[in-house]
Amino acid sequence: MKRILIGLLLCLFGLSISAYAQDTTALSQTLDSLVVKAQTKASGDSIIADGPPSISDLISFSKVFWSIIFLIVGVLFIKITTRILEVFAEKSTRYRITIKSYIPVIKILSWIGMVVIIIGGIFHPPAATILAFSASVGVAIGFASQDILKNIFGGIMILFDRPFMVGDKIEVGGYYGEVVEIGLRYTRVTTPDDNLVSIPNSEIMNHSVANANAGESNCQVVAEIYLPIDVDTAQARSIGMQAATVSKYIYLNKPIVVIFVNEFKDRQSLLKMKIKAYVADIRDEFKFKSEMTEIVLKKLIEEKMIRIPADTEKDGLE
View (cartoon, rainbow, N blue to C red):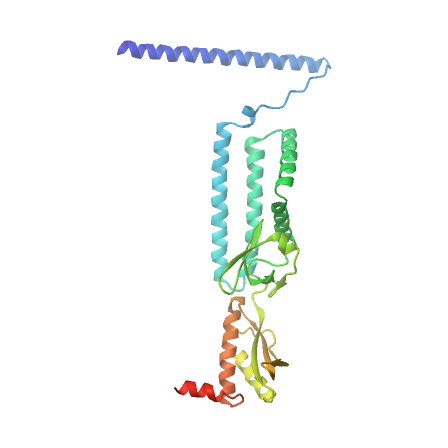
């Protein structure tokens, strides 16, 4: 057993001596080449440029390891920062849209910063290598994924041009809802039916976008109620104005307007009463519409300004 251990130690010692000798030889060769280059430069002769660095010089286990660690830390930082901002935004109706508008910008800048640090700080390739690689990758991506590039370019333009922000209510491509995320490829909108719709940014750039609140927490809501053609419009307007004024969702810093439009519906001429008012929080849009419909119709029935058909009354009694 002792002989085996002594043999292993001798082998390890021999390998160490061999590695040390190789390192010494490599070091002496490196020093000799440096001396020759220094002498050549001093004599005024031109130095032949070194060839491109090898793959082993650019990529090593330690560089890959630290890149993965830095990437994991960066992703966790983005998620934690985004979550904190979302929590603070949900606690304040007034500053919700403003805070959420910074989230996409922080994500984009964080990803760009991570890529720059990993490439320039950890791998640190020569400028010529970066240019050659960027040109090759650019050509390949340009031919392979034109639609993706259009969406990415559209997402960047949305962030800088700011036709809408996260938290705004927009209508685009037949969809209406609250913007919950502006990504590089898609803009995600939550519809009134609580459906999450992902709209490609290239389509948003090529279509008209209607913004209901334009970065403000309040927005105008229109509640519509059909009335008989012979209704007392002055009294109906008073009822609508009063109902809107006392609503818990109302934003009183902006005007309340009640207008009437004549429409032909179900083979008869009717008056459409539109109650235009602003809600303090855009998320209360449909609650306000429902409240206006319930309160105004109930008051109109009490004042006998609209009549319930006999069949409806009979069904109610039964």
